[in-house]
Length: 159
Image (cartoon, rainbow, N blue to C red; front, top):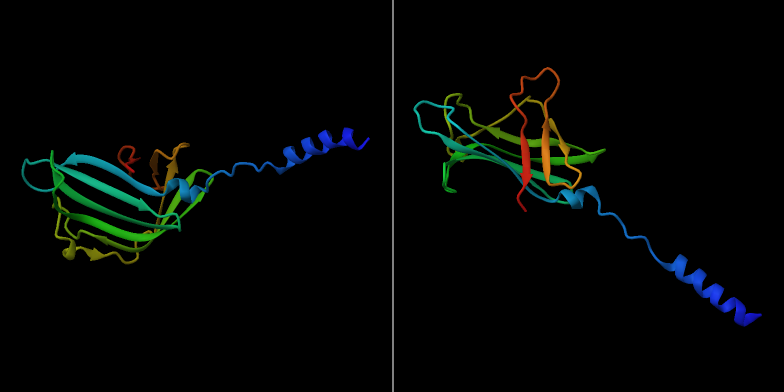
């Protein structure tokens, strides 16, 4: 009788001792850097520039970002349009970024400015939302209600 139970008990132990493979947390899956790049000219003249926007996520819920300008075909930063630090939350495929510090260019007709000339934003909307691709390969900006958003901004994961 005991010898007949041994295979059954062994099978029972094997089945119930296997652990399920845990799904990585959303914070660990989003960790990395995302980039959106566009070309244009927001100032005077005919020269076009690359406008680069980066979002960098840490798995501890901290996010930072910067917006800078380069010449087309170059990685050399000519100047900045803004930068921020803050926190993020992920819920049901939507990423919400809340800004702690946000600096921006106080010039409307310029393509870039020295980083030290950027001014702190006070009283501005303190959060933005992005839809996360199922594989975390990109983030699509969700235009807030009553905002005038031109086109779809898609940040692609670069690391």
